[in-house]
Image (cartoon, rainbow, N blue to C red; front, side, top):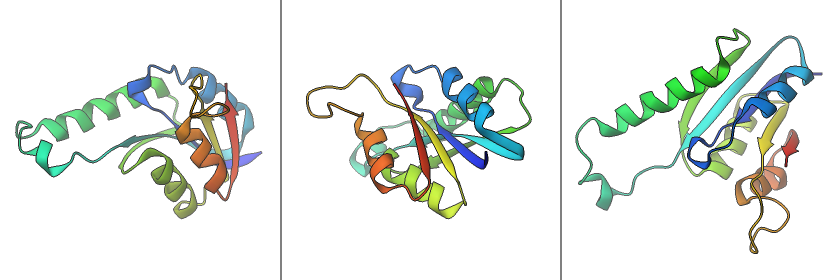
Length: 135
């Protein structure tokens, strides 16, 4: 059983995280915690000048609300939003927060990422903890 599990949630890909959350709950040790983690990529400076003031904070708040809705009031589930490139940010977060399992979904592959989605593939390759990939 695992004490500290993260479930990365890509809200822009239309995945329902319910299956990943159910697997995380099944693998969670007594007293452990699950964190729903969403990674928001930074907006390039040349685009940021065209974004209305306060829009980025509004978007971040919406992401947090969506994660909290996915958690459905379960007190063993935390939510967190971080900035960065998804593959690298997930691995860095896991390494810096004593995560012992990542439960990640992988989309249907295209030609360039035939076996795993690019984010899931990066997490599997570089993570120091166990990774459970959902297909």
